[in-house]
Length: 383
Image 1 (cartoon, rainbow, N blue to C red):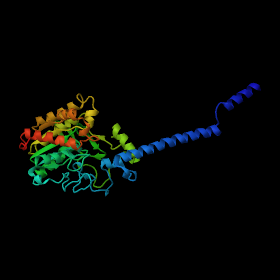
Image 2: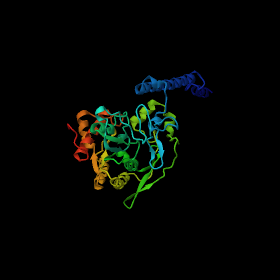
Image 3: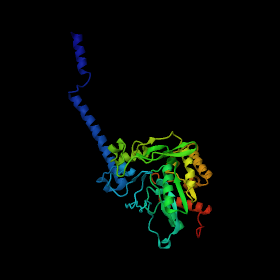
Image 4: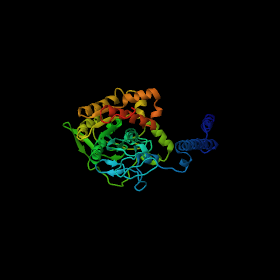
C-alpha cells in the first residue's frame, strides 16, 4: 500500500495539470508571445509603410503585388496593361498618371522639349524592349530614350513594355517599325528577357512563344488566349499578403518573385532562350532600318551573380553574336557600365533593380556615342 501510495503521489506531482494554475500560466505565456509577435509585425509594417510612401501609406492599403504587376481590376485606372491578341499585353494608349503617360499609340511620353529642341528631327529613332527600355522606377522624361531624344535633338519613340520577353520585343518591334518608319531601331534586352522567351505564361499572363524547328523560329500560342478587360490572377500568396508593405519588401529583398508576384508556365526546355533569340534575328534584319541590339543589365547582375562570367555572360555573348551574324549591330553595355560602376559605385546608377535617373543618363550617353561611331547619327556639336 505504501509503495502504491508513493506511485500515485509521484504521478500526481510530476507536472502541472492542464486545468490547474500551471496550465493557465502556460496559456497566458502563449497568448503573450503571440501578442508580442503580432505587435512587432504591426510596428514593422507601419515602419515599412512610412519609409515607402510616408503617412499617407498608413491609411491607403492597396495590394502591392497587384500594383507592381499592373493587374488592377478592369476600370481601376487608365494605365493598366491592355490585352493584345498578338503580343499578350501592351501599354495602353493615352494613359496619364503621376509617373507614367503614353500617347495614342502606347509610346511612353518624354518630358516637354525645351525651346532649343522644340522642333525634333525626323524620322525618329525607335526604342523597344522591356522595363529597362520603358524606364521603370523613373518618371516620364527620365528614361534613357527620353534622354537620348534630349541629347540628339531627334524624336525618340519609347515602345518599351514592362515584362516583355525577347520574343515579344521582336514582335512589337515589327509592329512599330511598320507604323513609324524609323531612322534607327534600338532593341534593348536583359539576360532575363532571354530566359522568359522559354515561357507561354509569364508574369501570370499568356504570351506568344516560339519553337525552333529545323533552324527556323515558328510562332505559337497566337492568337494569345484571353480577352480585353479580364483581370490577371495573382498567385495565392500575393492575394493573401499582397496588402503588406513588409511582406512585399521581404519578397523583393529575398528575390521571391515566381509564386509571389506572378506565375510562370514553361513552353520550351530550360536554356533554349538563346536559341530562340538567335532564331529571331533574321526577323529584325528584315525591318528595313539599321537595328542596334543592346544588352542591358539590372542591379542584380552586378550584385547577385558571382558566377556571371561563366553563366549569364556567355548567353548574352551568344545572342549578340547571332545579331552580328544576321547583319545587326550588337552593343553590350556590360564593359562600359562596369567601368562607370568602378568609378562611381553601383548605388548612383540603380534604384531597386532598374536604372536611376543618373543611370539612364549614362545609358543614353553611351548609346549616343555608339550610334555616332557607327555612322548612324551625325556627330553632336561639342562632343
